[in-house]
Image 1 (cartoon, rainbow, N blue to C red):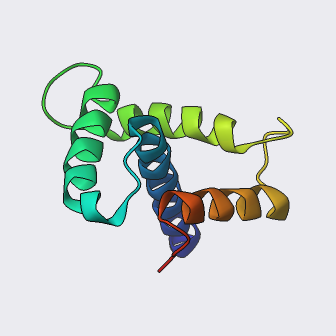
Image 2 (image 1 turned 90 degrees about the vertical axis):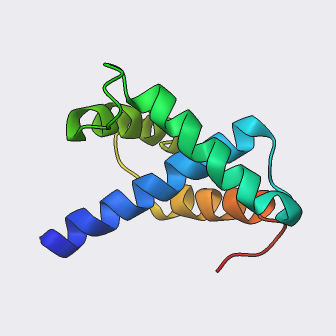
Amino acid sequence: MKIYKLSITLVLTMVIGSAFAEELGLASSERQGVLRQKLQARIQQQADTNHDGVISKEEFMVLAEKRFIKMDGNGDGQLNQAEFVALREKLQQLRGGQLP
């Protein structure tokens, strides 16, 4: 169960970051450092709703829920294989066709 929760957390973190990358329009490889810094600042700004300088679990989950809704293409409250494939393709486009 811990591994499953950790996997979900990692996926959500990746999704949140990639969605911000898309919104910022920063996908080229030469902007990797700038991208990381801007993503961190943007996530902090949007997630830290009480502005105390840290992101609580509750704040993170609110942001994760918003991203989950965006990923859930058919709106059924579940992520299926097709939706994960769509996410992977979107991430590939953001990274110039390369995924780790």
